[in-house]
Image (tube, rainbow over the protein chains, first blue to last red):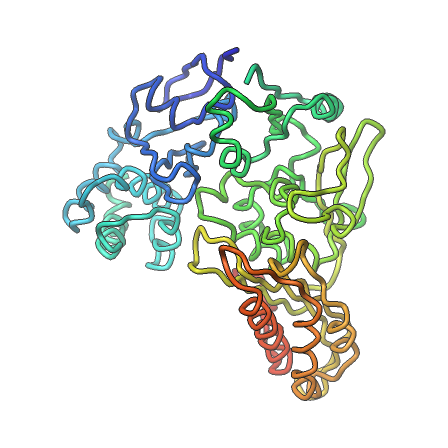
Length: 158
Length: 292
């Protein structure tokens, strides 16, 4: 039997009829067509499925849909209009931090959450914040550089 | 799965668990372990625990600090009022996004010998608060945890909190050995604590705890080594190191598995104990809460 889960998705109150133990990543991708969150490993190891829950990154492949009842979920699509996202996207381009792109939405989510909380992070802060996000293309240096670039301008745009 | 439950009282939650619902705290274990089963529509109803007041909050009480079982690893790691040892252990679990949902109650109840909050809790003499239909009881972690995925929780009982008895800050040591810094399960860990009285030259150990993770079916306190360190002059400890190393290696019971080997774990456990003892001798060792 499906259940009605009510939550805020990308700033709008919404509800979805689903199984309480459905994975949040499946509900976002299949019920809402929001494909920014990717399923990489499916067991919380790679970080590609990260979304924001009440503004903090969480792993949507190991979160039950029923667990977001009454809470606020933001996917990368929901960040699109925000100046901070646009800055990050530009810095990722400038630093050459995107290759295949599969890890990129979650990298942006993790970086966004970091800069939102700590606008002037050290390189260690950046590496720690991104430590749960695997990238098999870039070797990470360009991604860290992109976040450093963004941090330098964060206060001016947000 | 047919339905899910989100009770707002402890009594209802215990009743639901007794009837077979599966407690869901952060879900980071359940959702991995039961992924294929749940995709096939099988599995017990989930029992969401996020609406139960007794399982929330971190508060000082008369006999210590009470940490509700639903506090996340991230909340504990960031909490300035908690002992650094526990904050370091919780901060070493998984990745930032995982720590934002994984709870201390879940970390304890999954009963993994590699659970990173549990060795620090042993070293801090933490008590588990277990609640059932007839009220709450307190027990040690040794009494609660029996081995991988095995606890003494009754069918109608839930872990509602852990209590950290009041104690001096002392010196602490936390080291997790794993293949990488993030998202790696512990091969071997040591959470240690000691109280040293006196100065650098004449310091005496007046209390000590050594709790090793992932080197046996449960976290192992090495009481024989503790007894040898306890009441010793810190200056005399280096001479005891080879004996202490042997005691540690004989006390733990590591196995070969997909993450490491028994031999490696034995060697590294002894090395970690040695590092801790040398820190005591040199009068350093982390005593500030800012170390995390």
